[in-house]
Image (cartoon, rainbow, N blue to C red; front, side, top):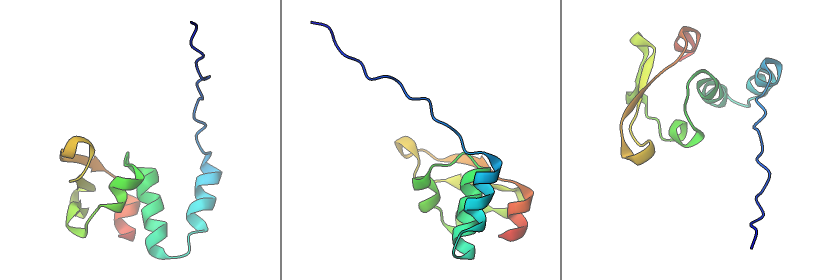
Length: 86
């Protein structure tokens, strides 16, 4: 019996203009900062949602994800422009 495989889909990334439009349309400052953090760092939505203020080390432009995959801690970095806004 032959298995029917689904055609693989290639994710289409957003353009810079689309990303800027999303960030500018954010309703609050908090939403805008979260969108910028998602864009600037390699975090998933769930990881950003679980971030605490204590997890961000602004002096070094980095943070710690405490509840990531397999419950491991990992570091992430973000841009200096985001540090100024935080």
